Length: 131
Image 1: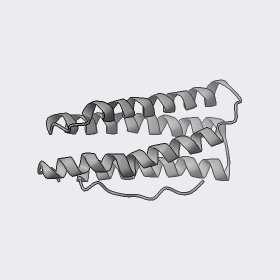
Image 2 (image 1 turned 180 degrees about the vertical axis):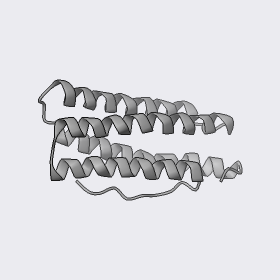
Image 3 (image 1 turned 45 degrees about the vertical axis):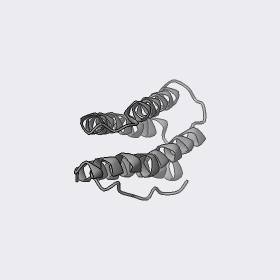
Image 4 (image 1 turned 135 degrees about the vertical axis):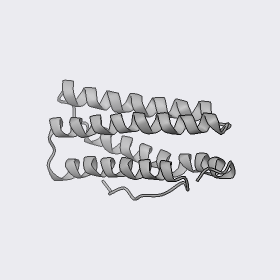
């Protein structure tokens, strides 16, 4: 599993939050490749869940205030990401199922969301004068 690189959308608040999310994901990736402990990874995933929820709320407020045209679809994507995080945490805590591949796939999908999908949000907000 590769370490996740940072990227920016050009909005300071969002970029700072994305950097924290990348940091949390990198901790998870490291814990999967160095020393896998279900309880440790579950705790790391709970931290990612908590911070993701706060980030999504912040981003969704900005999208609403500045009338981002794809707010509904983007918000649905956020809900899906949260749902997948919750599912992985439950698997870690309640089963012995091998989740390394699921976590890797999830992090890859989440990384693409932050690095690519959020670019359109950033472009819209920058056009509205947000920095």
